[in-house]
Length: 369
Image (tube, rainbow, N blue to C red; front, side):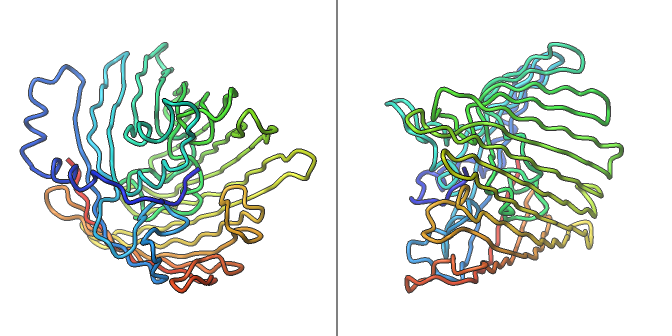
């Protein structure tokens, strides 16, 4: 589960200065084996949370995770292999989003937990077993959702709640079948609901289906079935379904719509249900300037996904507006204003009380190499 950061990360600023020199990429690229590409990404930010959290940790989000602080949201270095029958990617990462998102990694035994897991954004190898079929194994991005872990790939800078409270990553094995130019199927067998270290001896399964009849239309469905409870506790089967669509081009005017519905069983009690919906629109104004708008609703009345509130549940409605400016030399400047109104008081305030309202403004400067 994507969780709230509890500690200030170390090493993110050092990694930023490692990545910034423009001479790094050409030097790394010299003498690489066939099909191997290297790259890097740095996303810096400053966020102002109008609730002014005294710990500076922002709640109910992974990105941006800190208030009133210049910091690194995400920085990574990657190497990719793309050959006719082999593929793979390894990427190491740091940043406040990493600290936040991997804080819930299980720590069972002496060689598990987030210490290593959070450093590996992806680390997988893949083999083409037939012309339309790939099999990959390792750590890879989740099959759920339209919003990426990497901010540059999203229509808005901050992630929708529907994205922040579903897995960003998985560990296991997956099969990707390109049935036709328009139809793709993913089958996943993974450790669980966003965990690399295991919580139990069970495994979870997931499906993703995409149908893209043209470059401007995409329809999809993804699901998850599994139990994330430790072996010492009774099973709680989690079943999750998501439907999504995109109308328009990712590099032009487009609308993204996502709806999800999850259930989880409970021993000797009724099960729990939660849902989320998000609609995002993005409109280019010029070749270098674009506007975005988002409306969203997330309701987890039993606290299955958003736990530990001390209230009867987490139910909120939100909206955001953003401005993106593409700068020379692969820089991207993004600014966003976002607000929420809860069905009840769920947002902590500086004086220790709770409010129904929450608002944040953030500006980010990112560099892709």
